[in-house]
Image 1 (spheres, helix red, strand yellow):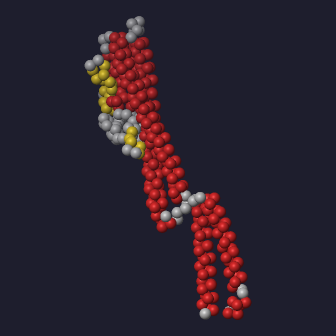
Image 2 (cartoon, one colour; image 1 turned 90 degrees about the vertical axis):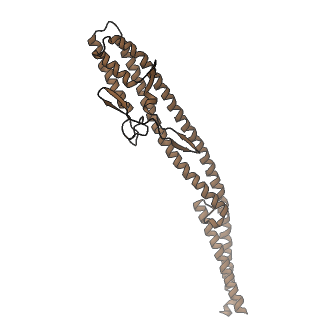
Image 3 (cartoon, one colour; image 1 turned 120 degrees about the vertical axis):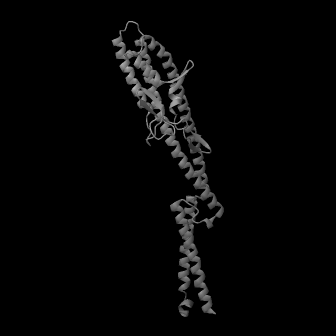
Length: 303
């Protein structure tokens, strides 16, 4: 009978101290990781919610990458359009000079050479590529947006542009196709900046019977072209503003998710440290009591 009681004492004491050590280890892990849940079985409902929140954060990360990519392309597009606007302003200055009746043909031809340089620069800007090597104004096309055959520049891109997902069902167009930036109507005729600059350059270099009048005619077309480019810049700016708005919204949602993660699966470090100290005190006391009881004369006699 005494043997059974002694065995039960050892077993119960060992089990109690083992439980205390396990609880202490769990508390130490919570303090070290900041997480309350080690296994789903610790709190199945909270664990399921934590998995949902983690998926939400991962998706937000993907949306953020898409947002950054779209914003970069739009910034490049805005810069390109700004360069085109400056180019048009310079072309208007040259057209105004060429329209002066006091200039001779040689002087106008010299102006025409500079206009041709502007036309070449316009083509280079229109074929600007993003970091991935895709033409900013080419839509879904893989190659250049524009190409020049003979003296004519033609659009080789598509009229559609793939949207980029920003999350929450919201999308944005990460750029602008060429015709939406460089094509416009003058009177009843459709044209584009390439035709206007190319035609002016040719006229000033002897391709027109009245180059001064050609220069005056080009001014109205250049005004229309500048309006189109300015409108395109406004559209691009609005898209960048939309991305910024979605970024702010995503940041707010991320902060809310982080707060919920902390409250759902996070450990209260201060409380855990207090409990650990209490647990270690109880464990040390239990160990000391066990040693004292194990050394009683009765136990010595049994051994």
